[in-house]
Length: 56
Image 1 (tube, one colour):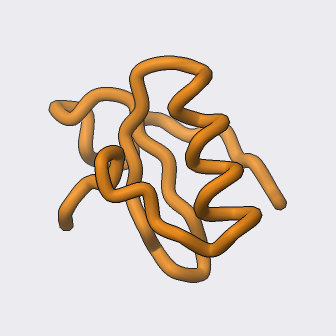
Image 2 (cartoon, helix red, strand yellow; image 1 turned 45 degrees about the horizontal axis):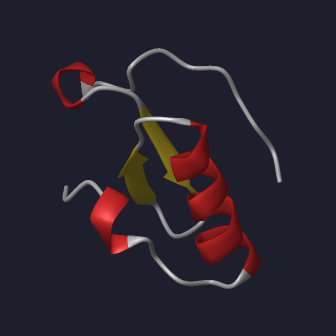
């Protein structure tokens, strides 16, 4: 896993965002527990967290 600090990634109106590569899945999040869910579900188990996914 690599973490890079970035600005709003050209999606400022959607709030905080993160992108998982190489899949290119965009997520928004509200708090630390959302990030934990993304890490556990997507990064560890390969399952997209649909409730936090940003449609492109």
